[in-house]
Image (tube, rainbow, N blue to C red; front, side, top):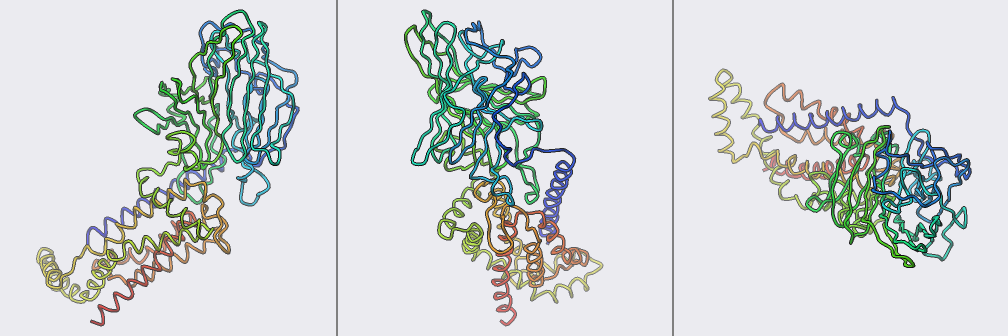
Length: 560
């Protein structure tokens, strides 16, 4: 019976750790201001300065803001401080974007199909923004011999319109930013948006009207401060989700680099294709350079505390009178693993299920298939629970049979404990003989716990990582399966079901252990208050099915 005791201690330790993490996150959230997730009103007139216009200063003081290049020959009109710059606003069915004409950086992205909070469905979730509370922007430019983005400043583009909107019936929207250098090189920075997509094609179209060869390469980077993820609601999750950089390597498909790691050991790598991403709860942004080019990837912690996640592409040569296109893609949207896999290999791994990724992926696949039938994620969780119970029906039957037999011989065990109370060795020998005579496995009742824990942990990560379950309603008072039950009804039902199930189990022979077990339903109910409603729903349904199966088996053995 020692194994049961160890499992009990282990479960308490794990749940205590989750509660500690929850309390730590609660204290953090209430001690530091965070960005408002509601999308602010669009403002065309933003006074741009070196601090807030997107200007990237030289490689002194904040030099690491900008990838270095050799022999910069700055021939484009530059701006370090602009008296008044208007953001270019772009609206599609999936994205609301602001582009700063200074450098052509994306300094705002909102997602109309994903609202900020469940009680504000009219306010889209803000992924990127640049303001007094939070800085999180996507920058790109040209560096090298004839690069327009140099130590002296950023190019100031012009556009035909101030506002662009994807029209009804159209599948594509093109936004062109124009620039002509002093030596007659025409540069178009083109943003291409597509209906239903979160990928933006970012291309540089070079028309070399000069008498000299033109040479430059593209860079793209994500610039973010170290403020907490304002969209990470851990109230029902227990542990804070990952916030930081991620890359794909030749020998490591998914490499995470935290903000702390950027300061201690900056990351550098070179490979063909690849991507550079910034991961947060449910969402990510990523630069995806030319998959056929050899690109450099790196992270930088700047002197003023910003985190840079960047790629640098190879230089492109354009002869006089010739044209060329330098291409990349930028993704800003939800962590939809099936769609991310289509965008770039390995990007779907940003949906990180941890070390139990294999069963977690299987559970998510089952969830999606059942959801397709019923259209409700709560029903999908119940369906998965039924399938899991069916898969382990025979194994659980053997375990419950063993527990019922233990319950039946409990009076004999107590008699042996009293007879050999002063001789533990003989007591143990007598108990083992009784188990052998009665053909009972004293550890057989532990199997349901061992079987269900991987499923429980896997489902925990599925609920934590799958954006599909974010704000997903079930029925009645459960309007978000990824958050904790607002009225604690499900945890209370879970506690009652656990109490009933405990009464069907044989009482522990050790009095101290018996007292501890009596408090387990109360303790687990308290812990489950902080868990996602979807996870508690799984546990409740699982307990009800277990009670039904165990009750039938117990009564059959007692009556035999």
